[in-house]
Structure formats: structure tokens, C-alpha cells
Length: 239
Length: 125
Image (tube, rainbow over all chains, first blue to last red):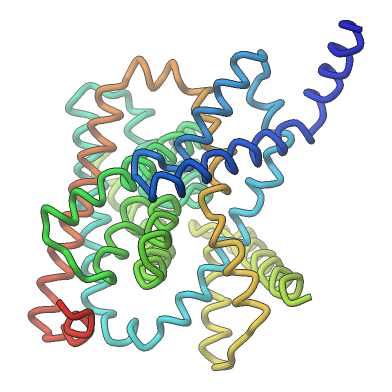
């Protein structure tokens, strides 16, 4: 009996079905906890899912590439979802026309100041060049950041890890920052979230309000574009 | 069918974006170019595509889920993140605070200067 169970386990854990199912189960549990807590920032569904899955993988001795063989089907959707952001962008056209100047100024200044300050901080605290280069595109949505990291000489997979951490931290602290800055306007909140915490921030923004979500999606899309254009110049200046 | 149609449109635009990015050896990744092309198409056609609204709505409502597989990749870098935890977390945390504060301050200031605050008034603030 026991050999049967372990045989089945060996078979199942090596098929892509395992990684895919594990991801969905963990996410459904995490999302349930998040909704149940009334959307508490500490119950961030991405954070909870990652903790649960890593725990399972470590306990069952399954390596990441093995897990990813199944999870890649979900990961793949990041491409179409990036394209999909063109739609909310178009739906906000009237507001976009009205607010284009403050939005572009906020994005450009946020990207430049945010990127320079984090690179210099990492350097000042003794971080390696590898980490400095990998942290540079941290505020951009993962697929874009990985592309940028590869081109400027960072480690794509480390960048992905840093991007996710940035998104989770951004979604965690945004409520406090909005309170301290006394920001009431959902469009401003959305821009700040999408700019500094990309998709995970956008998911948080959509949870808080539809308008905030649309603006966060817009900021995320535009900052991906702007960072891809601005970063190479900043890097050649800083390194 | 509406979801499938919309999803197909998204994939076609991603494919277009990827091929343009690859052909011209652009710095901008394919999906972002696809997003710009989709935006331009919508801008020119001025139509309301129910299929696109459906597909992008479904995908965007589960945005958090899509980051999980890459996020689990953290486990491969735990030792690097552990050995350089201070610069990494300080850089990320302060970087996030600084970029949020700067963008909020700049945008609030410009909206006030340009007197664009009509929708702020609409929010009843």
C-alpha cells in the first residue's frame, strides 16, 4: 500500500499538473483569507500564496524548475494581461486627456528619483553590482523588468524576485503613505501605486476602487514603457 | 465566445508586439508594444469591444494570481537575499516610499497649479 502511494506521488509530483494545481489551490486559500480579513494589506494574496507554496515545495523536496513546469501556464498569462492593460487605458481616455500632464510629470519624476535612490542606497549599504543592476527595474511589471534586467546586465531571475518583493511591500505600505500624505484622490493614489508597485499594486488598487485600479493599470503600463526608455540612460550615467 | 474572442485578440497583439520587438531589436518588450498597438487600434476605431472588455476584465481581476509562479522563484534566491538582506530591503522599501511620495507630491501640485481639480470636487472631498 505504502509503495503504491509513493509511486503515485512520484508520478504526480513530476507531472505539470502538480505545479498548476498547487498554485491554484494556494491562491484560492490565500484569496479566501484576504477577502475574509476585509482586504487587510498584511493578508496580501500574492504573499500568502508564495509562503504556502514555498513551504510545500521545501517540505516535499521539490525543486523550483519542477514546480515551474506546471506553474508556467499561469505565468504565461502575464504577456496577454500586459496587452490587456491597453483596454482600461482607452476607457480612461477623457481623464487621460485632462490629466496627461500631471500624470506624465509624476511618472517621470517618480521613476527617475525612485530608481536613482534605490540604486544608490543599495550601493551605499554595500550591495553587489549584480544586485544594484537587478534592483534597477524593480518597480516595473515582472516580464518587462526581466527583459530590461537582461539588457542592462542584471540577473533576470533575481530581478523577478526583487520585483515581486517590491510589489508586495508597495501594496503593504501604500495605505500608510496615503494617510500620511493626506491623499484622497483615487486617480493620484492609483498612479502612485501602479508606478511603484506595478501589478501587485494594481491588484490592490482594483480591490480598493475601480477608478484607482484603472489609473494604477495605466501607471503600470506607462511606467513599464518609460522605464524601458529612461533606464539605459540612467544606468550609463550611474555605472 | 466573447472571452475567447477577446483572448484571441490579446494573443494576436502580443504576437505582433513580440515580432516587432524581435525584428527591430527594441529595448521595449513585446507585450508592452502589443499594449500600445491595442491602445492605438482602440483610439482609431473608437468602438466598444465587448469581447475585449470581457477578456481583459477576467485577466485583470486575477492579476495577483499571475505573479505567484514568478514569486515562488524567490526560493532560488533566498541565500542571495539573505546575504545582502539589508541593501536589498532598504533599497526596496525606501525606493518604494520615495517614488510614491514624489509622484503623489508632483501630481497633487500640478493638479492644483493647473486647476484640474474638478473631479476631486466630484468625489465630495
